[in-house]
Each structure stands twice: as C-alpha cells, then as structure tokens.
Length: 104
Image (cartoon, rainbow, N blue to C red; front, side, top):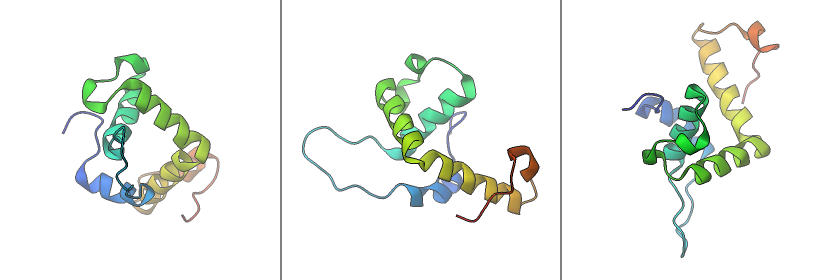
C-alpha cells in the first residue's frame, strides 16, 4: 500500500457510499477506490492536480470526480462518517469542527 492510499479496512467503511455501476459500452468508468486514493493524495500533498501519480488515473478524471463529490454532498457525508468513527474511538474532539458529528 502506498502513502495516502486506503487500506482494505478503511475502504470497507466507505464502500457503501459508492454503489456498483453497471458496465456500459464506450469509455470505462474508473474504480472509485483508485480515484479516492488520488483525491487523498492530492489533498495530503497539496501538489497540483497535474502531478497526480499515474496509478490514480488521469488527473482530469480524478479532479472531475472530486468536484462531483463536493457538489453532490458526498464528500461531506464521507467526512462526517469518518468523524463519527474517530469520535466513537475517542480520537477526535468534536469541538474542533464547530459541532458534534451527527449520525449518518
């Protein structure tokens, strides 16, 4: 596993947010986990999108999916789910986020 990539255990927590898509003719839909790894790499490093490692797919695809997740509210739901898990484990102070996390 590379730096900033999701472990199998972490991916198991997030997979319900990414339903399976039926195969379609034409272009191939990139794997959600791979693209999410790319988004995390970008957010952790602060590097330009164009410097995204090739293993995460085309930077334009990762950037487009990141924007879709932001605009649809999916990114907020993912962060909230992770905050709840950290809160339950006693590893986070909800006051740092301005409010206590609510149930998903």
